[in-house]
Image 1 (spheres, rainbow, N blue to C red):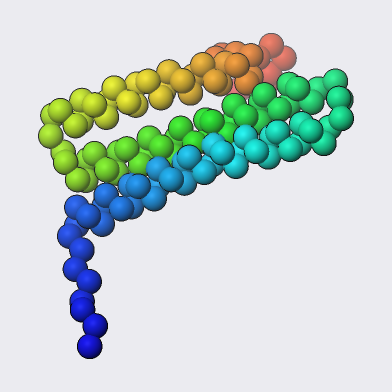
Image 2: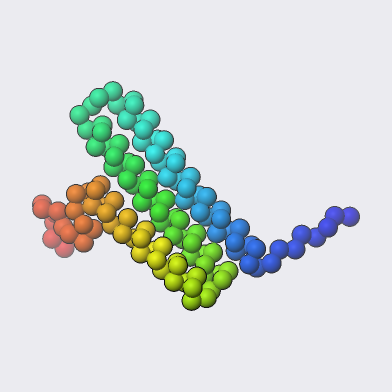
Length: 121
């Protein structure tokens, strides 16, 4: 008869956090690869460079969001102490800053600013 696999809650959450973080890294890598493939296939269209940069930026943004989720899962569920939560807060602040600057780079304006010509709500 086989052994029963016993996994503690902390081990399970740690594994889930690692899987989520791996998905975040994969989102970035796959997104960049697809953007570069589309860029190579565009054969010098005038907007291909801009489209490639925007696609790469969106891939990084998606990956950062998923990586933050993985950090939250691992930090809050596994070792919720003031030091780990402080480190998590610093990571979230840095990644949020990166997200905002990438958003500015992709769209040409801050997320809370309206573009000229946008309809008023």
